[in-house]
Amino acid sequence: MGIRIIGTGSYVPDQILTNQALEQMVETSDAWIRERTGIGSRRITKAGTTDMAVKAAKCAVEQAGVLPEELGLIIVGTSTGDCLFPGTACEVQAAIGAKEAACFDLSAACSGFLFSLNTACTYLKSGEYKTALVVGADTLSKTVDWKDRGTCILFGDGAGAAVIRWEDSSGGIGPFIMKADGSRGECLRCSAMPLRNPFLDKEEDVFGYMTMNGQEVFRFAVKTVPEVLEAVLEKAGVLAGDIQYFILHQANERIISSVAKRIRQPVSKFPMNLEHYGNTSGASIPILLDELNRQGKFNRGDKILLAGFGAGLTWGATFLQW
Ligand code: COA
Image (cartoon, rainbow, N blue to C red; front, top):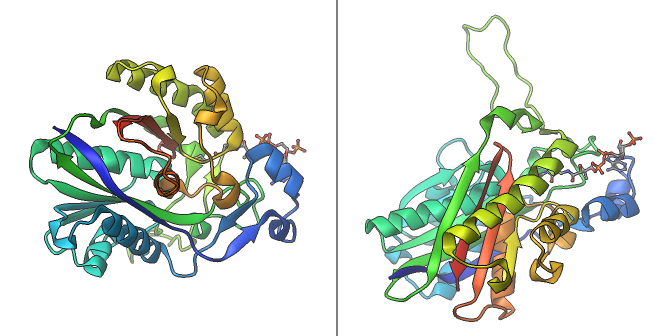
């Protein structure tokens, strides 16, 4: 028995924000952004996280060929939902008509999809549910200060989704590893609603933009991602050389090539789409997964590693056999 991905979907908004357009907004250049990050453009939503999550979810459910009522569980990995409540997963449920599904959001920033996938697999393994929809959707464009050239060049909006099912077949998803270090939360942070009540001496009514120590986050990623990839390979009893694709969170081309070098694998095994979308946070892994799937890149039995990292700090990796 194993848990398999039976459908994928993704959605990115139409509006494209190029590096050239950013040159008009902050002191930066296309050449600098490309050299330091690999990013050329990103997408900006005018409709929000739920809209994107629903569109990606519909594509995944359609490809999976399941009825919405067959979904027992919906988890949306997001840290930028449109509402504090209801959760994005509940809104997705209503939009696609998945009446039977238990629904909740999972907040793990850029590791959101990976942690949601692992969580959904654990529920499926428990026997509680047979089929689940896992979505990664984020609107980072509303968290960045568009005057801060250190962050506004990096992020974009989007959503990706996967339908997973407990099947009578070998392989599937797992093992996985999930890690966190809350003591380093300050290096990538965005506050939510400020405290507002009549009992405060002074109300804080300013929404805080994202703040980031770029160099510290860079060092964290290039150290922890190779470590967690090696650890999950060992847990799976598989060699790095046996892996067809390493699907990493799309934060920065230099981070991905450094990880490839550290685990001594050719960078050609690390597909990237960050040139077009930037860092879409929890959406980056499922968008890339869907693109590769729809291009017919995966064959049954292919060994794939997923790895995510981001605010928390959080990071993790998942082994799967297609
Ligand atoms: N355009 C032009 N110059 C910029 C710039 C921009 N957008 N942003 C910063 N600079 C300048 C800095 O002010 C600095 O100038 P100085 O030397 O005169 O002080 C110089 O470029 C180098 O800045 P530095 O911060 O050292 O650059 P870097 O090589 O570390 O690249 C990041 C900055 C943000 C691209 C890089 O640190 C990074 O990608 N970190 C990881 C961030 C990330 O992935 N976060 C999400 C994780 S999920």
